[in-house]
Image 1 (cartoon, rainbow, N blue to C red):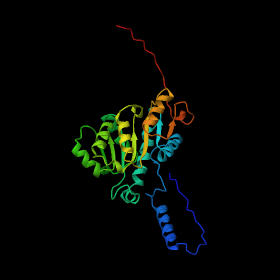
Image 2: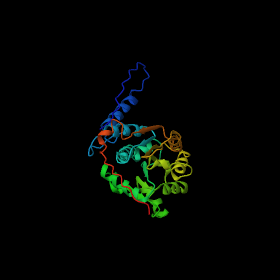
Image 3: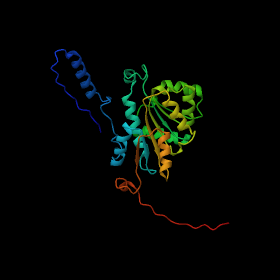
Image 4: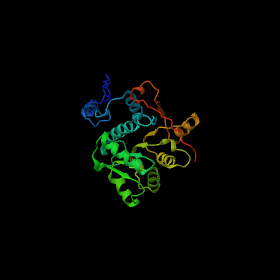
Length: 266
């Protein structure tokens, strides 16, 4: 599924109107419209069933720093993968250079998850959903030495890391933070105090960079101040919250049978 930007034609009677520049702009617009990797389009996968709430959340997260709060099993990973994939398309090396974000250096996309098993789970889901070439992707946890990580930051484009690795590599300068274009943080309810998510965000935004942030959680907090704390720490602008009782979610929630088993003390 794509979203397109229509052309705008302006009539100008000024004799000094730069017709050559106008022709060049029209040619460039036509080229962008016919180019599937253009930033005037975005892609949604057709290899998974379409759910309206996931599509709506994705539209928000593509263009706004968003906290996605969904119960477990309702597709937070899919929305994150779609956002990451479109930023992968939107920021190849030529666009990065055009926008002054780095010379001949593609945009970097990072997915952070708080444990090694979660990192491995998410990188597998990424390949199953969007299927980008594996040579562009790497997982990095504390088991990968800093020297190798420094090399990977220069040669890879999509990173699945633990928050601690992200924090350390930003602070050491091995993470090319100025080339980050998309950062996804799983288990975002951990973002308080000096947790690595908070430190990484502060370090990156101090550069500053043009960065899209998506935060994922199944348990944002039971009270408004707790949720606001996450929003403030992660520089979130929009909240996409769904519960199992929301009308657009109910069709995808399995019925549950609860059996109470009493266990004697002792």
